[in-house]
Image (cartoon, rainbow, N blue to C red):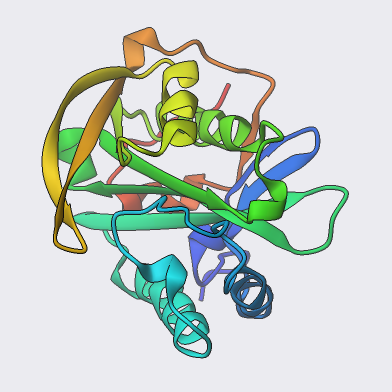
Length: 221
């Protein structure tokens, strides 16, 4: 092993603003978040996601949660990757949600996708918008993305609001099936030329991951 080299470089990535840090979580941190998230993501009657993973019961929820994060680690490479950054607040112990970035063949497409969720107890405080902006800054400034896309159920007004505030524009929709019911799934796109860069967002520890992610080597100056 090369001295100073991290065995899993994405663990070193940090995206920070005053009060919030996005980073990949350790296994003990993921275990704590899995316990908090089981039954703690959706309020009664909410349908925020196209799949029903958030409504799974214990212990299937926690096992699936851990397996997903492990799978993201094991399958990451230039042809496809997903970085489920956990959301850490400076004034609270433990993660309170996930802001994910993913891509397929990033070196060719230079396109990222985003998805996120927060514990219900931390929604409605503007955190969702902040973490989306942080992830986009990382994608455009550190990775050199050309554009970013996202989707949400038409009924998920909070997610749509975050996308529009971040500068995305609608690019159409398709019909997805949710429990056998046809459901609208709008799509949104944000181009690099429409992004207002945020030098106040601190990005570090990403250089060693660029090759793994299929990203051109850049600086964050």
